[in-house]
Image (cartoon, rainbow, N blue to C red; front, top):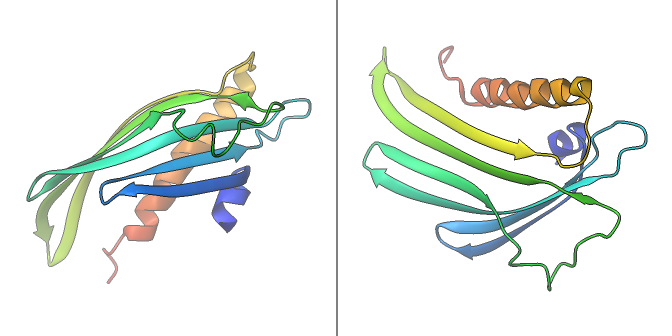
Length: 139
């Protein structure tokens, strides 16, 4: 939760759908004076493709609009993200994973380049932080 808030997160809701999916609703502050909060509503679905490969997809949804009404003061963004994880052979006893990411994020509205550049940098930083979190090369 602390990391979510550090990245501009204001509110998030996670609601399980089944053993392979959940809804993820989030509201974020772009931290630019005069900009309204951005809200994203996604369904996350994952599937094991083989013993060594799985895919996780994030897709826009309006499935929870009745249960969690949209904030009329927020701007609604759109995104589609696909992660593919593949187990690789161990290196000196250390598990290895290849991660592939394809993402499209539209924060909506008229957003200047300097804001988009900052958001992109932060998005990439989160990937680096995730790698550091799971890095076992020093163990």
